[in-house]
Image (tube, rainbow, N blue to C red; front, side, top):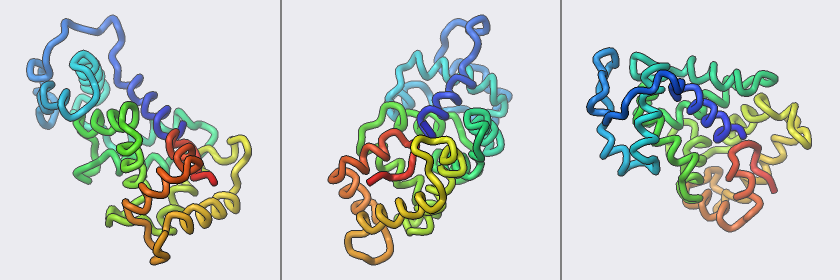
Length: 221
């Protein structure tokens, strides 16, 4: 699973070893002198994510252990993806996923950005996950998806898993998928897919929903 499984792998990476777990404390009580900023309190994150207080405590403890400066940079994020997809080139796709997590576009992921993204991917509603996916494909963040943007993301997926998927997906197949899906979604034929067009198309066509729901392949028709 291109996004969800790889992100779960990131969670495993940042969770502390059992032997190193200390008595539970609120985030407010964790020593953050080594980090660049103090993260939001647990009460706020419990309201803005779908994680429990205990889950947030464990994730933060591991996050701080693996990222003592309090942030995950893109190179670290790409390294984790490359370990999860060793037979393919995951660099481009990891870049797009990183940018979707990086809400303030400062080139690094804070703990808040990390857990908010995880919350959507792992426990979000269909609407929330589709909106997240729209943002993934909207590479330049201008509020619409162009065919070139869709092609870039689909090509990145192919570079990562296409050669080893069943059935095998080659560049021509990926391009054909993009052409079909884009034509279906661009209802007014203006060359752009808006969020509304994206949502309506995905919710109307269960085959597209199936393709988007697991975040691991090109859109299927």
